[in-house]
Amino acid sequence: MKKAQWAGVFPAITTPFTQDLTVDHEFIGRHVSWLVDHGCTGIVALGSLGESATLEFEEKVEVLESCVAAVGKRVPVVAGIAGLGTAECVALARRAEGVGCEGIMALPPYVHKGAWREMRAHFSAVIDATDLSCMLYNNPIAYGTDVTPDQLEDLLEHENLHAVKESSGDVRRVTNVVARFGDRLNVFAGLDDMIAEAIFMGASGWIAGLVNALPAESVELVRLAKEGRIKEARALYDWFLPLLRLDTVPEFVQYIKFIQQELGCGTAYVRPPRLELEPSLAAATRELLQSHMDRRPAVATQSMAMGHELTAH
Image (cartoon, rainbow, N blue to C red; front, side, top):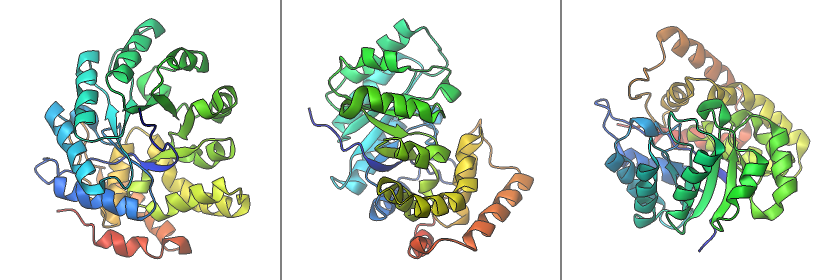
């Protein structure tokens, strides 16, 4: 079994749609390649930001195929594995391995918020479905299931569990997991507005959202934090935070896709039940974004030009 390189910035990619809400595979390819060109070290598809719950099973497989075709072996493609039932998730994990993904990210099942006995059985089935390197996704805010450090230890019987995406919002959890498990589990920050704190406390990487539109800033922020350049990291983080906080609200998909559209690297199309931002929210977000772009850090000199080349169809 090969351990994926669980470190750095892994974009949780949005799933791009055309105007008729079919998946835009041509844009997926260009987008993930652009993200890797900007220094991202992995690609995570079919997560919450990827509107996975609105995709049919075969659509999910096709998204993974497009990602793998675009980035090849430059970085690992990680498949988000989520569904209503365990059997569906196991099947998707196996298909992910079949199309060339190098890792999976195991999410809690949709809807059901069971006791740990049930959650452990679900996660174990998904992790055991393949020999792929696996990340566990802990997001009690969104999914109502909190995997504690004690419960994580239960899952370490699976040798291919190598990382955890920590989205509890509590940086003390990052500190706890790092101190308790050391190199056995890599910890990734799972919320955009906790990345600097998490890196300072020992996290190895970031499953990021705003990176879909602003990869240069995202990669630079992690680099500065890892190098302990606190003053420089804090300056960039202060600039970035009002935008990063858009990843932490119920409309995070709409906000991030809207910013992609504004910066020429995507469209705002979302699948129902989500709807695009209402005009007043769109106007306020545009104003917020513009105020930040007017004082965009020098690190991003290349990013805007690349973005214009990415405009989706």
